[in-house]
Image (cartoon, rainbow, N blue to C red):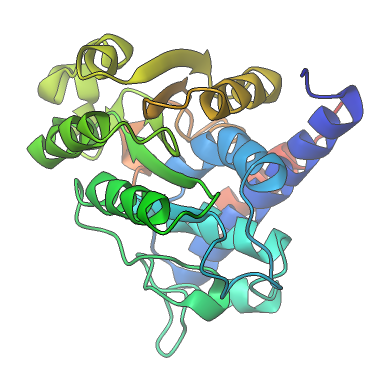
Length: 278
């Protein structure tokens, strides 16, 4: 079923709010990783608003959906989306990365806030997610597990151990969304260590896999809907994105993988991100 025009517009508007929150949070902390969550905002918002069964009311339920942020350094966008779902207060977002705040620089497991697992060490998220998916099946829960990853994280061998295991167990309730922006902390991914065609790799490991424009919320929604129809294979959605999306001086630039904007840069980012959404 195609996403309605009204819902697609709402997703884009919320994704813009997420981006605004991300730059405010990283600026207030004077540290953090803005580029990744800006690039992931469209496909993450589509997932959280239309597919992930997680609410303030069901956050402690055993049989709800689970989410693991494999690329944990992109957590500013994750927290902003949890705020959109009523699990974190908007005011708390500006405590990001500050002493005593539950919103650490990488996610720390906190079920009251809807944070299912602590991540940050790259490569571990998909392993945990496939364990959750297997556990859900063994418990007879009609729930799904979603995980994010990235092209840079795909250089980790543990990703492919998890991919092997998930395919072996036929975990149709598991979906990984890979942020493919060709940027990592040391420069372009294809120059640091080229992971090449991830769709083909996941298919070779026995997964259902597709590649989409990660900024096209309709295409992302269709890919997530298709994943739900695949009963005996895990699904991988390779989302092609631009790091720093929406902020001109951050786009496609590795320097903004992990760098906070100053006051002048924040003002420019807020102005650019405040453009109307259609």
